[in-house]
Image 1 (cartoon, rainbow, N blue to C red):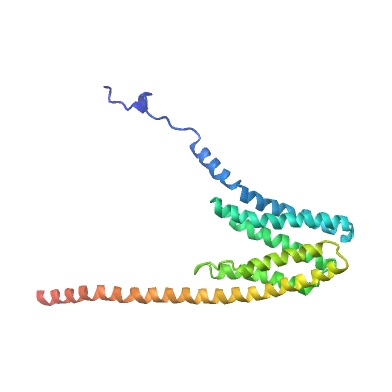
Image 2 (tube, one colour):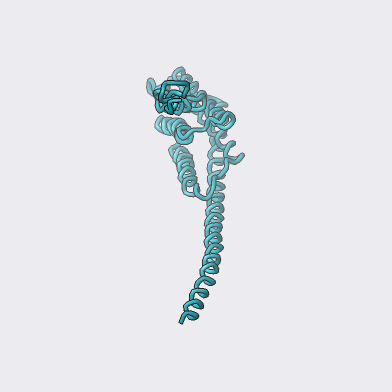
Length: 244
C-alpha cells in the first residue's frame, strides 16, 4: 500500500468529467427548445408575417387577406396547444411564462389595429379590447403575491369569440356573412367587458384576503413574542433583587 489515493495514482478512481459546466449548460439550454416553446415562438414569428399579408396591396385584396387569415388561424390554433402541452408534459419554462402572453397579445392586437387602420373595424372596439387585455395583465401582476387569478370559463369563451370574430373580419366577407361577423364581434366585445369586470372583482377580493391574512399573521406573532419576553424579564429583575 502506498497510501496514495487511487484517483491520484491513476487507478480505478472516478475521473473528472471535462466540460461539466458546459454539459450542464447544454442541458438547461435544451430544455428551452421544447414543443410548447417552439409553438410560442412560431406565433411570435407569425405576427409580422400576418401584418404584411393583411396590408399587402392596400389591404383589400381578397386573396392576400385569405393568406393573412391562414396565418392568424395557425397562431390561434397553436395558442390552444402550447399551454396544454407545457402543463401536461411538465414543459413549463420562464421563457414560456413570459413569451406566451406576449404572443397572444401581439397577434390579437396587431389584427385589431390593422383592421381599424383599414376602416373595417371601429377604433373604439379595438380600444375596448386592448384596454381590457392590457389592464387584466397588469392586474394579475398587482395581486400576484397574494395568489393567482384562475382562468374562468367566461374568459375562455371570450378568447374563442374574439378569435372567431377577428378571423371573420380578416376575411373579405360580403352579404349575410358580413352581417354575421358584426354580431359575433358584438358578442366578443360584450364578453370582453363582462369578464374584465369579473377579473377586477376577483382581484379585489384576492388582495383583500391576502392583506387580511398578512395582518392576522402579524397579530398572531406579536403576542407570542411579548409573552416569551415577559417571563425572562421578570426573572432577571427577581435575580437582580435577590443579589441586592
